[in-house]
Image (cartoon, rainbow, N blue to C red; front, side):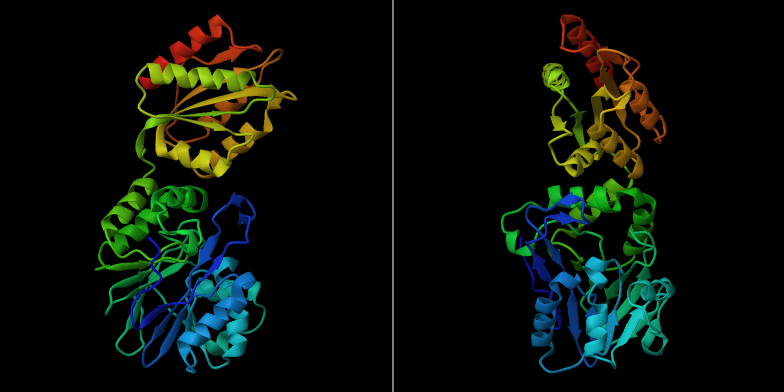
Length: 389
């Protein structure tokens, strides 16, 4: 799946980061991440975004090799997040005659990261504005809150290339892409990075529908050239918050193993009742970003947690807060708590779920007291039936 060739005139100058452990200091990236950047070589030269400062030296070396002694006329800033804009200052210093291209929000935010007066070397663009480089022309499309307020994308009409900013990105270094499926890490990336902003993604997709797109160049992950309807279709589905697959996520947190045993039993019961897929997430040990991904992927979920210090066990509390913040919605959810005395987990989990839009909570909410007993199994049978109904 690795493809770092765009065209003769549009060159990839991005960099892999395989040393990073946490993306945004919170998301596990065992296969690293790519910081994608591109340069368009025409009568005028345009660089499309920079890279994280930690990768600046390698990026500048690759860029200079593609420039072949030429100097860039423009730097198009589609997104100011530091993993893409971290090297703006270095490039601007190296090429003092280069003009920075962005929208009004871009230039209101730029001094927050790179102090100084940029007005003398900036070109402010708005929706539908164009920039001619010669045979290549860029048209700018505003994409606010996908997933920062200044974001825009750029469409190059002669080669029908969409430079999509963070849209259609995924975790994983390009050097580790061979044989990898795009979907899983793209889904995990979408719901954890962009997922809160479904309405804004829908607005951008409507604009993109009017463009003849043959190549998508994102700021993370592989360049997409084939079967673009598949990728666009996934973004349309995800941003409408509709379940992607039939199945259930059993998300549990367990202190001493009793709730873990109950989760295993619930999986067994759901499968016996014909559920086509039951994913199980140990929120204390598994990647919570993957659990969030699966919560959105499936239309049903069971949350199971003990009470802790009179409240919700922290791994479950973190998970529920993350779902709330990513606007989890339009799903059916069952609640099971564990508490030997003064159980409070179910009430707190219900409170989280009731704050979310369109959540259908199963009527039976069960309390396990310690180890799983026959009465608990019977209650889980009842809950599974309600969940799958």
